[in-house]
Image 1 (cartoon, rainbow, N blue to C red):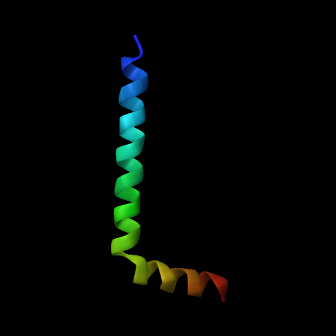
Image 2: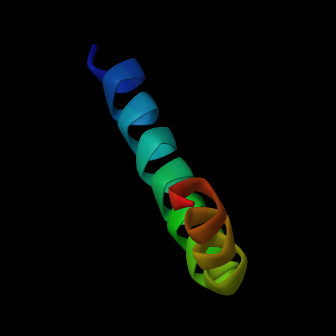
Length: 39
């Protein structure tokens, strides 16, 4: 009955994990972007 809920939760966790992986692999680029935005 709650299969869809579990699937969507796993999908969100996977998406969040992918997002974290992208952030940590591109942290130098993100720091540069933050510096440019803050100026």
